[in-house]
Image 1 (tube, one colour):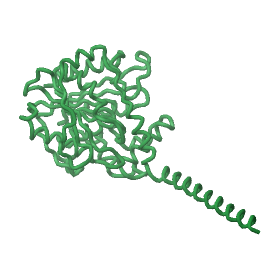
Image 2 (cartoon, one colour; image 1 turned 180 degrees about the vertical axis):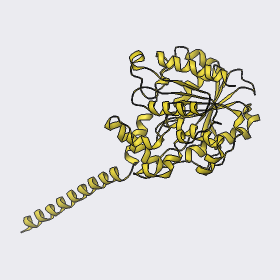
Image 3 (tube, one colour; image 1 turned 120 degrees about the vertical axis):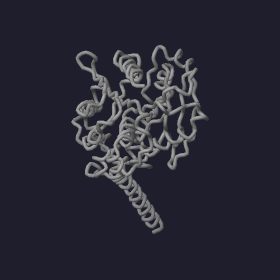
Length: 339
């Protein structure tokens, strides 16, 4: 009798344990499909590796620069820090580039841009390298607002950092290109500023150029890209995380944040480039054509596969390839002619 009771108790415990395990599995599966957080976390981890391959000249470039790290730019949001990478012998008149890093809106860090910023600084440009709050914890348009906060902080502290914001550029790679591109659209179009409900804060005449690398500029197209299932899943996850809803492609913000639809004749001179494989080349070319049609000075750099082979997303950070070297050289040429 006691043995039968013991067996019955054990059986109940096993059933309860199995039900708990099943419940946890179902809960985990529900979380996977009902929230962007699990996949966004995985994507964030992937971006932690970084993509920068230093040039053969990097050590010499490093000697020609100095860096101030982790400056608090007094953001209302998390992760509001920036670095300033200066030319070694800079003056107040040194041109300034504000750079927003990539990472699909859910990952990345300013440290991944430091190598490229050093190369730019060694050629005479100060780089303000900005961190911002990531999705899904903070959603659109938080990074756009933080770029404004970073600019305002530097503007209010020009004496402290020995900078004068009379000759400035805005730059970004991947998601950072979209953020910077949208921010500049706000500064140069009062109609668009009203549409976004974000105030313009910069005298447009001080913005001498925009540098856009491998960015998305037609946001509704993200969910419709004809590419591998893995990349489609990546696009859907990052869109869901950044815009805050699974069916993000129906949101008004998708069209609002698509700068190809909103740039005007007053947009500053622009440099656009992208890889030819698993990236946003079509969107880069579309923005290039749109700017040309509005008589904006625009330099486009795109690469034929038959000559350069496959160039993946963020190819420009491999500075030891012909395409990477050409992109950096063309970047410097663009900056030098737009001062």
